[in-house]
Length: 260
Ligand SMILES: Nc1nc2c(c(=O)[nH]1)N[C@H]1C(S)=C(S)[C@@H](COP(=O)(O)O)O[C@H]1N2
Ligand SMILES: [Mo]
Image (cartoon, rainbow, N blue to C red; front, side, top):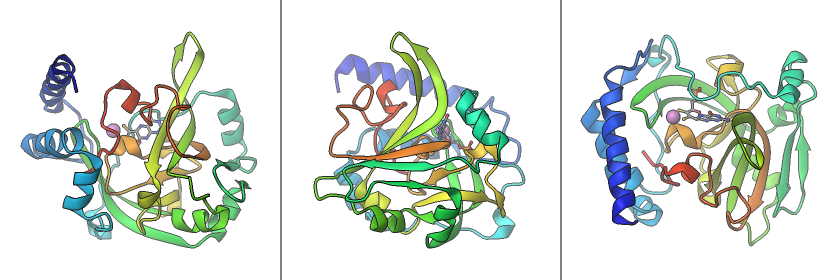
């Protein structure tokens, strides 16, 4: 990383840290500033993915909690209600017409309804969500195991990453609308706690939290967990994905791995 870029990022982090104290966090815990700041500089920003994997153990489980630990109010962050007309139409119909497309480097491209996803092996987990902004909330999630979906579509040997394309428009650019996108490596996609969640706290996933389907990927920061998923594309690199860094926030300077 160039020196100037590093300094720019440090000063951004300092401003973020100052902002944490002022955040209204109904029902959510605040990480101590030193805790999240250390994480941000020490794990997410400076240590590369390979080192991260060695330290944390690629297959380590994120901590799980009990019903008693659930945050009374889980914060909704980023997009809270996508304004895209096609999404609004799907929502009006309870997402009965929504389909998840699975495309790219797979033997069997697929188009799955919510009932198809509910028919896949599921997992329920109570976990802590950590946002890079310095807050965390504990929630209960139920969803299809991403590993089971992958077993169905069969990634080709050259597939390395999953790119998640979402329904929500983040900004208008000269090239048109920029919708949220994220990505993960295949190893993390097969992790037992990686699920495509359609339920939160024992109810159908509400719109502010990513209805009808959002990723839960409990060993990484909040921005890695795409909400409002419309398509999963299997690729071997990010060259064709917007800025080429593998995610909307990554293209704006965040770390790709974002481990916690
Ligand atoms: N599609 C989409 N996914 C997204 C975002 C977003 O704005 N759009 N924000 C990310 C960020 S920064 C966080 S912290 C979490 C917030 O999830 P929550 O609303 O359930 O708290 O979603 C992530 N996934
Ligand atoms: Mo976040």
